[in-house]
Each structure stands twice: as C-alpha cells, then as structure tokens.
Image (tube, rainbow, N blue to C red; front, top):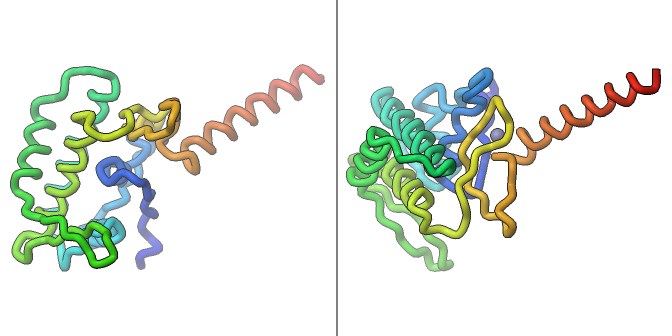
Length: 191
Ligand SMILES: [Zn+2]
C-alpha cells in the first residue's frame, strides 16, 4: 500500500527536507506525509526512528513544518520573522528531549526518550531549523525559482547561486520547459 503515497524528497539538510514533505505549495500541492504512518517512515529515513505516531502528533509535525517554511521563507527574503512561526519552532525545540550520542564509529545518532518520541524528533528538526535560520551554518537560505514551488532551501554551493530546491525535480522541469520553449520558437522561425 505504500506505493500509493508520494515518495519522499531526500535532502542533506534536515529542516528543509522536512518542509519538502509538502511540495508545490504554489501549484498542485503534494502532501508527502498524509498519514501518521508516513511521518513515522519519514522520521526513520532521517535517523529519527519512532515506534508510533498519533493523528495529534502528525498535526504537531505539520504545524512545525509550516512554521519552519514561513520563517525560512522570511529569512531568505530578509523579511521579519513571523512571530507565530517563531513561537511554534521554539515550543517544539524546548519540548524535545532528544540527546545526541556518539557511536563507536564516530557518527552522531539521536537518542529519543521513550515517552515522547515524536515530540523529541520534532525537537531535533526545530533545532536544525533554528541553526539555519539563525545563520549559524555555512550556507544561505534561498527560495526555489520554480513559480509553483518557491520552497525555501539551504544553498551550500560555493558560489551560493543555486536556483532550485532540487535539481532532479524543479531544476529539471525548468530546463525541460526552457528547451520546449526554445524548440517551439525554433520551429516557428523555421516556418
Ligand atoms: Zn523547487
């Protein structure tokens, strides 16, 4: 039955991968975590394994997602951060009780407390959002140039000139659209 759900878009930045679970916000929006179980799947893929998720926890997750999207978008265009979004991000961050632990192989893992795993996972995502919105990480928040997407993404390219949230989806589509437009033009001028 999983095949019925839209795939996840995997990125390197946790917070913007999370906001990417709703894509095409300015077109035909695609909800990639439509059920609590899909949120469990998404968290597992991102190293935040939880046993279960209730509909209320999914609501919390979506509220955090849209708050990160709003705050990251404001930061990308150097606008004032929306106070309500900041409040939600801070609440989730404060209420999460995840702890980073070091594996013998030298990797960081998140240890979630048993009683409130989803809240702990959301706390990790909120903290990740805070670090990029606060400008503490090497990179720059930007908005995807696709008019139907306009997702906030974290540009870590050396020149900081990345235009698309994802080269394989938005970038490719735009390239194809340009190719088709040029092709049509070419056909017309040849007539
Ligand atoms: Zn995009």
